Image (cartoon, rainbow, N blue to C red; front, side, top):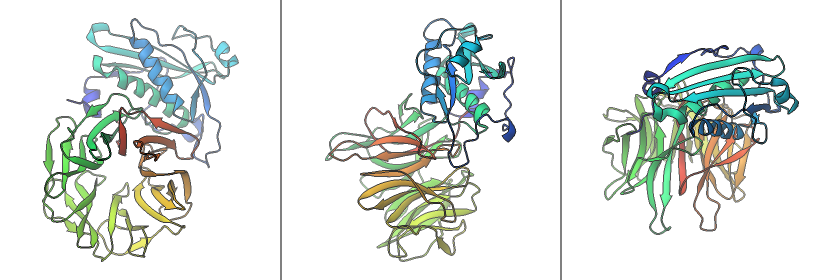
Length: 435
């Protein structure tokens, strides 16, 4: 059984402020240490992560996870090399400042009372003041999550943006030869750790998508009969089919409130978009066209839908109201556009673009302006947003018969990082922030 929800975690956690405070409210613009939005023109904030104090391997594990999170962050950069052990409450800030650190993170962990206890403190070397701090008490099994939550707290205090480290990704694990490929659903932390397999690989599975609560996954399952849209409860492992549809079904995805699933259903040589309640009932048709409409995704407020269609002759991106009706084309560059997905912030739509023999991952504004290619190569596909709308994951097939892999990049293309998985990986879907 996999415990994922914020409710589950916080039910076993006591949170109390230390000498500094860390408010749950957004950091005011004037209090941010780094404004990362304007055009991506910024220098990363340098942070020294001192080894967390504590007995046994827990302290080194928590410290290592936090450092690794920051290494893949691009906005916050850990100072190179191992840092000296310090008194968590009163580190020698001047020595860290001389080494180039703008902030120093200290902490302590222990297993007192059969619980996992973690303290952290964040110091500003310029002012010499502690600017954030927190205490966490939780189950022993949650030590990895606590490390990600600390990293998120630091990220929010420095940037004023929501974090993303305490989140998970569901994807298709691929193993075996090309002729006998085994595909099963797997779930990992955003850094590739803590893997769990959700299906056994008896049936081929594709396009998994998290519900807004991260407790359910919708996906396509291809068995001996017609393909099924399946719902899987991540915590219990229970599975059920959603409806019984004639023909092929593609790209199921949840509405922002988690009450509906939107998908495309094929009818002869065409496919149209449908929405239906998660509980199951007759699907409601949203498009009625002789073309192929597929890969639908709701806007964060649920008022609009973005999708791909070849109704204009080639694959392009369109937007329409959530109830259906007239659609407006928003992609006009050279090449074909597919797999559109709306940012959680609502400010961008990510897409796959095929042109000149290359597959690119890009973003554009919902009105089609500001198109920007983030990364391109032999075969990049399937972008998915981090819960804070500042990062994208996608999968890449490098060619030469190798397995596809998952990669992560930031919104501005400042850094690209492989997400480690034990086998081939495709179709990633980033879930919401857990803590």
